[in-house]
Amino acid sequence: MTDIGETFRSLHVPGDPCLMVNVWDRGAAKMMQGMGAKALATSSAAHAFTMGRPDGGTVTRDEALAHAAEILSVVTVPVQGDFENGFGDDPETCAETVRLSAELGLAGICIEDIALPANTPYAFDLAVERIAAASAAARALPNDFMLTARADGIMWGQYDTDEAIRRLRAFAKAGADCLYAPLPPDMDALARICAATDLPVNALVVGRFARQIRADFAKIGVARLSLGSTLARITHRAMHDAATQMFDAGDFAALRKSINGNVIDDLLT
Image (tube, rainbow, N blue to C red):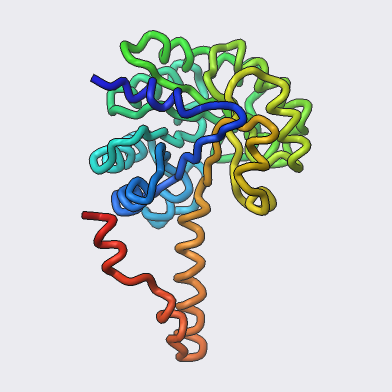
């Protein structure tokens, strides 16, 4: 029987980054797999949007697990759970989240160092303890499971690249399998992060980083590219702009841009 965790791990090659596509429902998951995605991930923000909630600690662990189970039910590629801060401050909660995720069939999860719902990072020692507990739980599993440790304080302006690297190195020593500092200041900073570790590094392709191409990330040693909630936000942007034209001007021109339903049907069959 194929070990989905091993399959997922094998995709992470520094300098030859895999594209892990974040999806938010079964249809999006089937569509992205049908178009060639080798790995998928949930998105905490996109999932919250489907529930009519804002991003940032508004989804419970039970809800996130149930959502991940829906994605897993329709695809065969590895799926990672975007599980925010592990759904609790204490290390044991992070460990339990790993165990529950593995039981579900996820190939891995990521855990942030942010004390949601605020944007405040955990103190350094606690942040490391949380990853150590999650890693110990992952190593005790019967199958391979990939733990991604995130230094999200850099994204929220809570600390700089040097502190992100300090945390990521400590997370690596604590047993993390993949490292992730979303939205560093620029590509040079991302290159520094990649050079600071032998572990695979994930890069978030949004905003200014969406101006790059895959070869640019490969050149600096990135091993995985993720999209966060960007595809969901593109969908919401299309709805927002079309609705603005309809409600403000009675103009339905935007509806002419919709994709042919047969294309979607073919991907979902």
